[in-house]
Length: 96
Image (tube, rainbow, N blue to C red; front, side, top):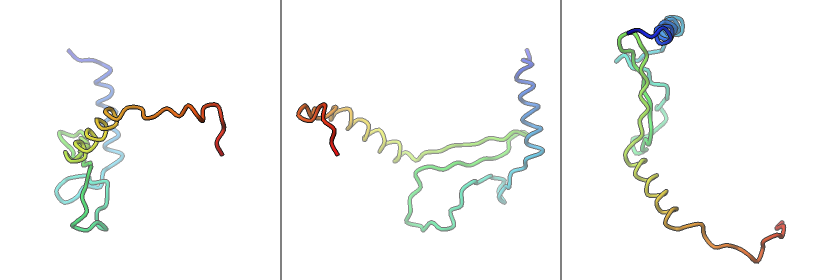
């Protein structure tokens, strides 16, 4: 069963793709970020890449597992630490 709304979106997507071409690399990938100034010792925590599959654009957003793990540890540490001390001595005063 075809949905007219999704059929319309697919037609619009193909029309946009025909009029706004991507600058693809030799391997057929769209890489929106330039890494020419990064050294071999620098680490990448995220990246995105695009390609064309069956006439449709596909964009892949990627995060390195070490970045996800670091964020999870940081959030868990803040949960375990709590809200911190309550400064009742300075309540109601404007500190400059």
